[in-house]
Image (cartoon, rainbow, N blue to C red; front, side):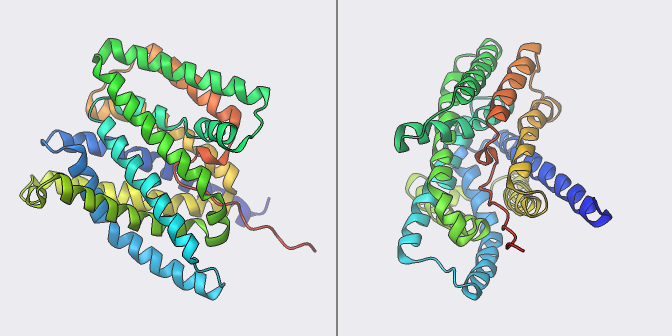
Length: 317
C-alpha cells in the first residue's frame, strides 16, 4: 500500500468514525434542549430551519454537477424525492425526537441501529426477497439484544420507556422504508443530491407541521441555550455527518465506511452517562454488544446513518 493510499485510508477512517459519533450525538443535544422546557416539535423545527441554508447550498452545487453529467431529476424523480423526504427525514425525525422525550439516548440509538434488519424484513415481505439462515440468526440476535436493554431500562426508568421505544422503532421503520425505496435514485442522482433535496422537502414538511400544531411566536423568546444547541445540532450533528460519511465512502468504499456506524450506539452509551448522567449497567452493555454483533453479521450498507453510495467502478483495462 502506497503512502498516499494509506493516508487516504486513515483520513477515511477518521471521517467515518467522526460522522457516526456526530450523527448519534444529535440525541444528546435534543435531551439538553428538553431541559429548557421545549418539546420535540420545537426541537425538530429549529434543527431543520438552521440546517436548511447548508442543504440548500449543497443542493445548488449538486444540481450544477448533475446538469454537467446529464443526471437531473425527472418529474417522476421529484415525486419520489417528496415521498422520501417525508418518510426519511420528516416522519423519522419527528418520531425519533418524540421518542427521546421518554427513553435514554443509548436505547434510542440502539433501536435506530436496527435499520438494516428492518430493511431486510421489508425486502422479505414487500419484495419477496429470500432470507438466508445466517440472516435469520442475525435478526434474532439483534432483537434479543434490544429486548434485553429495554427490559433493563424499564426497571431503571419506568413504563414510559415502552412508549418511547415504540416511537423510536417507528422512526427506524420510516427510515428503513427510505433506504429501501431510495436505491435506484441514489444510483441515478447520487447520494448527496438526493440527501440535499430530501432534507429541503423535510424542512418544508416540518414547517407546515409546526404552523398547524403550534403558535409560530412560540419559537421566539426561548432561552439562548436552546438556539445555540439547535445550531450545533443542525451543523455538527446533521450537515457534517452527511458530508463526512460521503467523503469516507469515497476513500474506503461504501461497505467499509458503513461498518463504522457501529461506533454510534457505543459512543452514546458513554456520552449519555457523561453528559446527561444516564445510568450504565452490565446488562445494558451486554445487550448493546449483542445488538451490535447481530447487525454486523448482516454487514449491509443500509446500516449506515445516511444513505451510502457504491464507489464508482473502474473501467476495464
